[in-house]
Image (cartoon, rainbow, N blue to C red; front, side, top):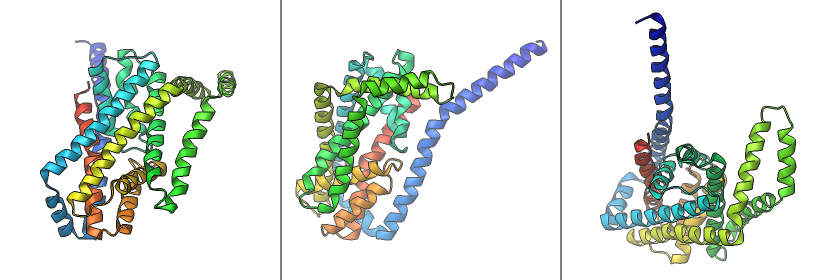
Length: 327
């Protein structure tokens, strides 16, 4: 073998190693987020009294825990149906098995600011003929629908908790402003033309963003908006009912409306905080509101930890399994 062949072999091996390293990056991000969260939850348990927390977890029992996971799974599957519908509207249908695998793999990176890591789905679906602009538009349509659905559920408890009104109003205003802006085709076209004529490096990014926005608009016709909001409300209500069931199992029952409000409001604050997966923000709000409703500190912490494990971290675990199967 000559020197040229050896050099080519080394370059191929190096490229393969680099590609393998890039493939491992998402899984490393998952492991890092799990480690950080585990330390945080351990500290929270020690602060509240770990023996009381462990006793609370044991009192819930496997049947209730299985029920919580099934309700969370219902949430994910309803959102997958909505995602598939968005891709259909964007003329980018995918066989459901491939689509489901890519969609769930995206959950592995849910614990990123604004859940932006879930845009990994774009890379996974691109080899199957889905343009990046379409999958990214579907992602942003999902985020807008989720935010609107959570605002609707959080509105249930505004009458009993006035301090929540500014945050709920901010979430609603954010969605409304975004929808109004993307409806202005003249504004988008003007930005697109200006960016296309600019030699600046960021201009090409702006052009691509304009393309995504134009796709995004197609997901918010009146029928599409009704579909997205309806599925989103039912999906997030399923996890809210799970939270209500959990509180009852812990011997600290609350009316269904109040339990759903606490869950939805905690998710809303976590989302608006732009913290990775809402970590820290959602937990603090949930514990605080449960304490205001008379729950002992240990019970509030136990309910919060179990809820987050059965919703957020169950999604991350499923996502990691699906991501590990991707080539």
